[in-house]
Length: 145
Image 1 (cartoon, helix red, strand yellow):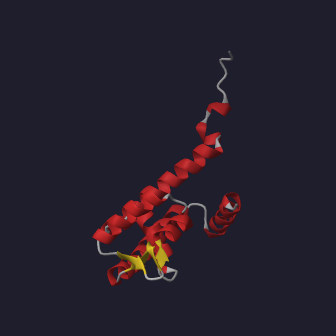
Image 2 (tube, rainbow, N blue to C red):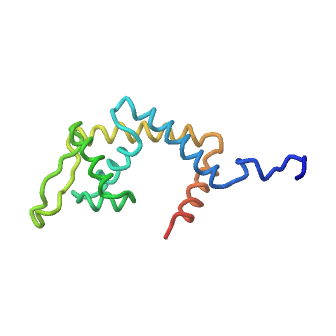
Image 3 (spheres, rainbow, N blue to C red):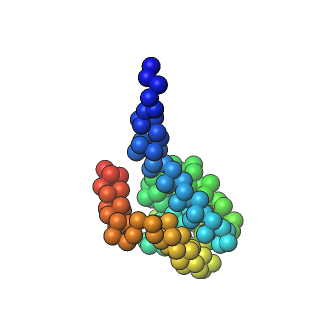
């Protein structure tokens, strides 16, 4: 064994570590920004999907977000109790529930979009706008199927 310090032992040299901790830091920042609205980043993800499409089934929302159905049901249960979403049977297929934002949900989404955007901008400010755009493009490339 060498007594020389190894730079490879530094977790800041490991991509997975950096991505994980950057994501955790961003989530903490955005969750704090969304807390006054009674939601968190996961809730905001669902609101974004629902705000940008016609009424969708629970399964469609879950697939768009890449989460399992059980997690989606639990998330929607909370949002429904808060009066942010409604679920009703799909008239064309009563086995499906259609999910929509309520008026309160639309207002929450608008406020959340502004709060989330500000928190995200603050998070990315240290690297500047050009590099922020490049980071988004790079990450999109990495997560594409």
